[in-house]
Length: 159
Image (cartoon, rainbow, N blue to C red; front, top):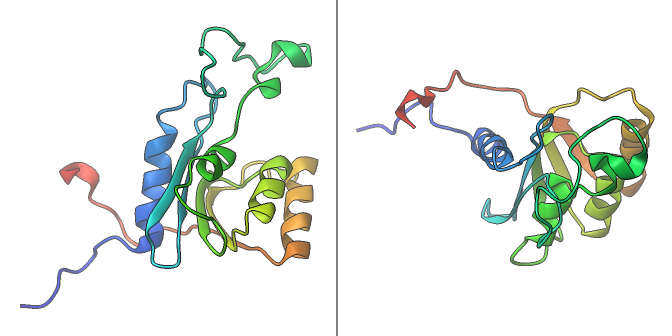
């Protein structure tokens, strides 16, 4: 009997996992997720955007407007950073899957952690300075990146 057709590719599998872990985020506006895999496609880290460990979700603001200290931006740890912090072994030479193209701050951590490739689902902030700077640093550091393009129409009703 031949093998089943239309099974998930690794890219599809890990992007779906990034989207799934993003659903753990308490952020009312943006839910981001990230998955790090090694050279054998074994998951070594997962992350989603949220406040640092031991900080209650009710103790800090989730807003996007106003004074910096009164917004989430002063406090939220991004999904990409959390995936690196949560990794169970070195991320050197690994791939990162992310629901969003990483910002400049995350890119600094990605580069310093030795991640060699980023596969992302959305680049909705492409032209904003933070993401222009991120791409510039990735290019200079030789970290490749590409947008995930769905290959199959997935039948997720079984899941």
